[in-house]
Length: 377
Image (cartoon, rainbow, N blue to C red; front, side, top):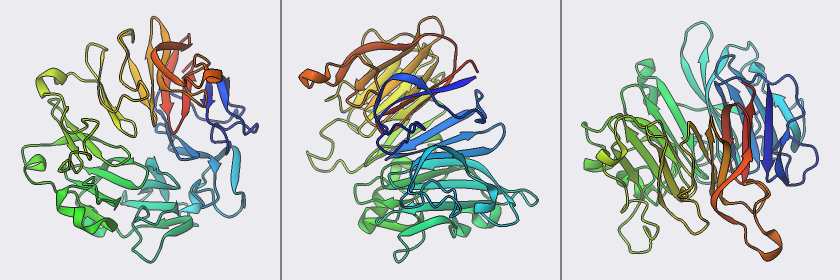
């Protein structure tokens, strides 16, 4: 089992000490990583979180200047050149908390953890953010070590549980087991629902409210955060995008306008992800339905293979086909789409499905101009 990474590496966010961009999938030189089909990569800004759901182990690499790698003061490093394990003791000395869900924002990380004995959930944040990204109130915009968020109202005193979390550049959204959606951070563009737009920044968790679009009939099963929007999808393939589209300019990419009808998505969809300004649904047929910004060829090209796995980064996408391998397309300036781009001419957009790896793959990951392939798992 091995983990390959390529793309932007200026802060060693690929877990390679070279601090140089990599244009070919290169093996990560850390042997003790728990790799399986349940391994998840959450990468944003210049740091990366690796979380294995089967072992509940969490690792971090890259920029740690604001403490966003959650490793605690013992490392004392502004940059983690390779993955380091986040020890349970950073959440409390008794090591009572087990990571359950993780998300990475621009300069911050969010960890949803469960108490070993009581099964109580808690939210921890680390890093920096001036727009409420830490959910610690307007006066606390930095957390160099993980700090627990006051989530009593969100969790309704333990009567609700978080089942998924997503982070964009400056906002966070969580989905709960009663299908309610809560969030915090930047919200003036409607990414936390129209009812919260006037706040501009939500410095504590608020319920995401958006009139009829989030009425009782709509029960989301997955949420995703773009740069300035939030996407939600239900089991029937109905998609709702939360973003201010009142002015002509705000929806210039058609993120809201071009939401596909549920009958086109279908109830057998496999995955729903987004980039900074593009959304993608992996359909039951293996085809990918894309809409939103296509200025860097982010939409799925006509020659994309029927995919089993998909990972969407800031402006690029990876897919895996068991018969054909791993392919990439979109914006590839830093090598995150392989070596197919003509950097000398300034052409860094890949408008075709470019093969970047051939072989068995267990999982994919993508972040801000970074790409990840878990092989042999």
